[in-house]
Amino acid sequence: MNPESAHASANPSPMATDLQAALELERAVLRRVVERVPAGICLLWGAELEIRLVNQSFYDLVPDRGGAVGRTLDEYFPELSAGPARYVARTFERRGLVELSEEAIKFDGEASERYYDATLMPIDDAPGHVGGVLVTFREVTEQVAARRALEQELTEEHHIADTLQRSLMPDALPQVDGVELAAIYQPAGERHRVGGDFYEVFRAGDSLVIILGDVVGKGPAAAAVTARVRHTAKALALYERRASDFLARLDQILRDSPDASSICTAVCAVIEDLGDRSRALVASAGHPRPLLARGRDVHEVGASNPALGLAREPGFSEREIDLEVGDRLLLYSDGLTDANAPARVIPVAELRAQMTARRDDPLNRLVDEIVEWSCGDVDSARDDIAVLAVERTA
Image (cartoon, rainbow, N blue to C red; front, side, top):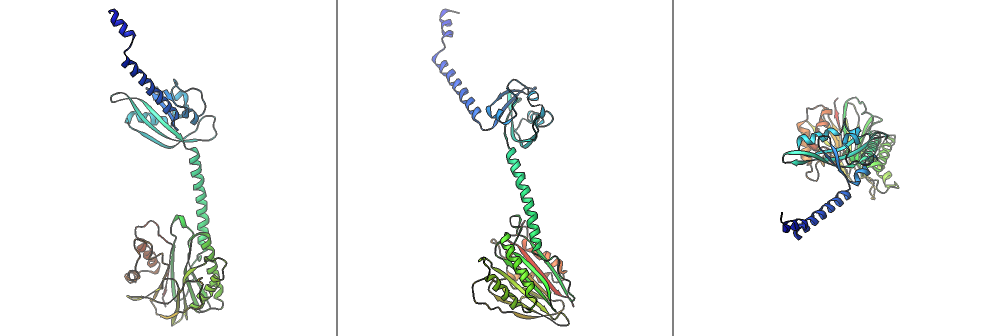
């Protein structure tokens, strides 16, 4: 080597110096980025899974066991050998990302498990050959605990809600000679397990009283109004015998309530003379009128009145209808026709057609199929649905 060549080697060119400085700067920036990433980072290398690189978050998210770099995964985390470490091998085999969600790890010396989300990324050391695995992870133990606590709370709330809802419905429909009864209640979904729809059926002397209604609102407030209406209706049966009088009394009680939001729609049918000849007195208060099915003929019956609890002058009307053997009366809440609202509200004419098409179905099947037809493919109804059917059998 001549002196000039030796001199050139000992004194790199300005371009080489600039390139070296740029590389050092990039490495420094990369190190700072790795350190500041709000997730644990661990680079595992070779068949022994040697820990080549970790950041500060790595040490913050695992038990303190001293320095990790230069030690193997099995040495540093013996707890992983029979569990999560298998995913590292899978990353080598698949040469693709492996993602873990809420992976449970029980570290030696700790009383409870920790949970982690992690991503395992293969790193090539030659074209087509995986030399190592880059693991990024974060601890989600608190989130898992919070979710489980919420699930437990919701389970308890659902149990309370189911118990409350059952208390708002009759334990069983009464057995009445010459009359068959069937009813169904379907809540609007998980968010509103305690709804405002209700029905009540009870004897009042020689008459059968049927009330089906819908209290404005959901939850405990609506449940309180529902309970008040049901219990009041039963008390009224001691001296009231007309559908219009039942609704008038309930209206007065709701209007006198300290809760200004005590508004309820309802329909009442009082079936009298359950012998050779029956008649029904039917009145509706802001509620869909019942459907009377006689053979293939189905039409709405009853008188329409304003909803209960509104500030207005009292006064309710009713309509009298004869009930022949085989006649069916269907009472329902507007959740039946509004199950797919606002996309589609079912016209009463279509509901009448369904009653005609199912005129030979047993009464229990009728109410089930009417609700199923109304909801269609919808997982849960938009609103509560209450349906009650009565048929004169003799």
